[in-house]
Image (spheres, rainbow, N blue to C red):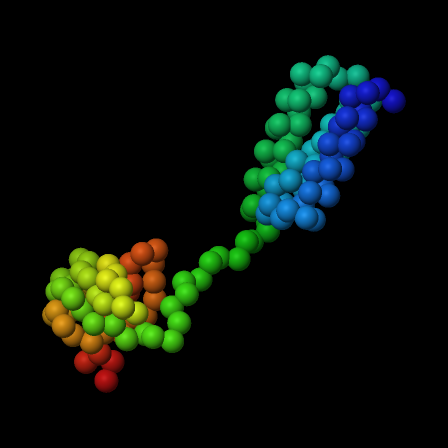
Length: 142
């Protein structure tokens, strides 16, 4: 067995085992599978540079395919119990303003792009999009 085949087998095994201990969303596993395939191809006497190119291309294709077929869970916003906030500034239709939420000032936008919200009004936080809170005025929900 040529030495490059042994190196590819070891690299493939290490990469596959790394996925067990350091989860990398199947990236290390797919790179390990690619290394094992290249180990088999190295028995056909491919040059070292061609083996490296095949490994890189095969790894890229497998990682992209795994992203397509394996759905990763999306992170949900962590808006907990305190869903009431108070506007610090006016929130114009379709624009952002500021609200006081859990003792901090946040950028906020009204859930309905047609509604403006006056300053110092109680609003309910419906969700979070990045660092912007999406709110609805209290008087519309009653």
